[in-house]
Every structure is written in structure tokens, then in C-alpha cells.
Image 1 (cartoon, one colour):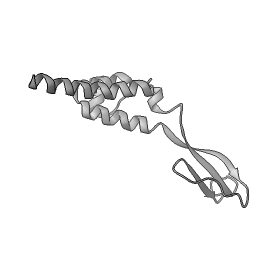
Image 2 (tube, helix red, strand yellow):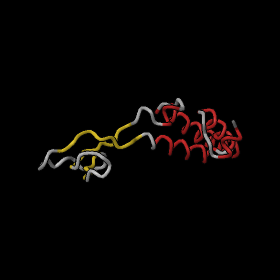
Image 3 (cartoon, helix red, strand yellow):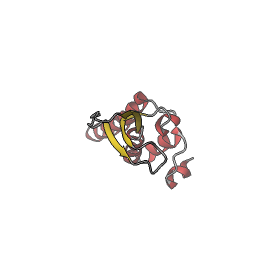
Image 4 (cartoon, helix red, strand yellow):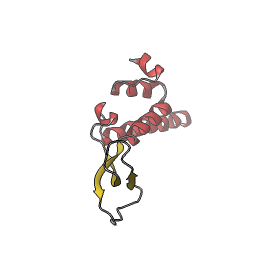
Length: 117
């Protein structure tokens, strides 16, 4: 699947590990994007008239006008981890992603020590 990585289509976890060997910085950046993409906005409730709702980095309120067939009103959304995100579908865990990132950093550190030692 090395060719798939070159084309930008990462279909398996192995594609990320293969890229780590060839282009560690690119592999790290792509996995970081994949990890960050595991969060999505979910509708968690419909607000009643006069109810303020919560708005911060992980919550927002959206006014709906009924154009999409929904009831007009205000909907509370929360930014939550999606268990069906590509990050998880490929088989990654948060712990494995941290090890993946550290492996590349440790390899660079060893190379510097070898050159100076």
C-alpha cells in the first residue's frame, strides 16, 4: 500500500506506519489531523423559547428556520468524540497515536546522539 500513501489515500493503519519510515514529519502531521478529526458536532437537544443554551468551545446554539424540513427553533450542539471517526475505523487508539508520535521524535534524537558521540 506504499503507492496508496503517495497518492494521498490512506486506507489502512499500515499506510501511516509505512509513511513514518519514509517521511516522518508528514506521517506525524497526517496522523495529528486524523486524530483531531475525531470530534464532530452532535445535536443534543432542542431549546425551549427563552432557554439560553450553552455556548463555549465545545457547545453552540444554532437557529433553524425549517428550510430542511426540521422544526424552526434553536438547537443545542456539543462537540463530541465520534466513535465512528476514521481515526478509530483505521484501528488507532489515543495511546497508540501518542506512541506513534514519540517513536519518530525518539528516532531523531538517537540520530543526533550518534553523530555527536
